[in-house]
Image 1 (cartoon, rainbow, N blue to C red):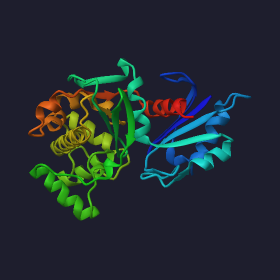
Image 2 (cartoon, rainbow, N blue to C red; image 1 turned 90 degrees about the horizontal axis):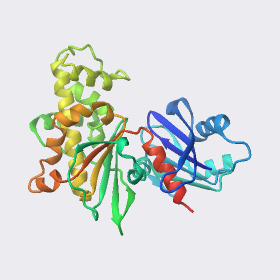
Image 3 (cartoon, rainbow, N blue to C red; image 1 turned 135 degrees about the vertical axis):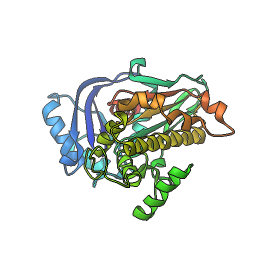
Length: 323
């Protein structure tokens, strides 16, 4: 039996899987509010107490965690946790425990996703010998590369969401200037994430929000999105358009850096909820508008991952292949 986990800033998914190639078979899956627990072993303990099979040993565990993994340890960027693979191994007598960056873990799911688990934004023409890439906006912003090595896509981690935000237009320069005043340094996820929507809302609203939204509310990103789609507040529409443009531009930047001619995949919790806006709005325009390489970007497949458990599946895929 394999234990897999996807530890995010808001939710943590855990699952027990039976080893199978290319895609492990789930036995039990559950989700938890990450910040309801003081550390990863506490969540794992709760999950195994409810789901573990008596007498069945866990041969390998793999956890995708939202932060850089260095020597089997990680300081999570949006959760006040330090995760150590050896702590988990000792606590639950698991011989092999692996930690991956959460987007690297999700990237392991890309080759095994079913057609029904992805939504095509741009059909493109995938190159059999090309690289792929993955970007995912949710609580934060994650990115991963999938290098084509001998016909196989090999995931590689990235902390690209914490790179500098690059403003392209006068509107984005205004956002950058005001967020620089607020934060000192503006990383991409200050704009392209759920919290990014709240940050942009503060910049665009120089009068009371017509939809009555307080950007400091925990659920303000969802409120802003709905108000924009329903056109209840012109400033929320501006906020959402800026978010879509910045998301598309950063996705295009990642596609250029990785030369992802095999496809650019969009994960995370936001994209599946705004599919129509991604298709009709400025996202794809900002993705493609990269002179002189617009033809290459227009030919790249762009797909949204619909399965919210993709990170968990990817961690299980890695655990299956790990020795």
